[in-house]
Length: 80
Image (tube, rainbow, N blue to C red):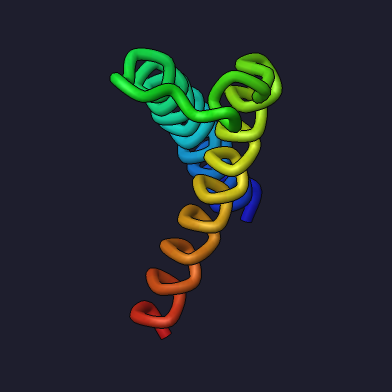
């Protein structure tokens, strides 16, 4: 039982870490695209890049953890 719990924990941590990286990268790319546009909008100028990146990373964290729980649930359903 301990081995299954540690596998679940490793899966959640791994998926969450990947989600953080992908979320941060995607939000940084969005910021760069917004700032390099030919017509820069007021929203683009007023947003804080750090908070926007942090927001993307937190959404990625939640998405990764949710994906890990969903995958684990599906695997357990197929085993029963």
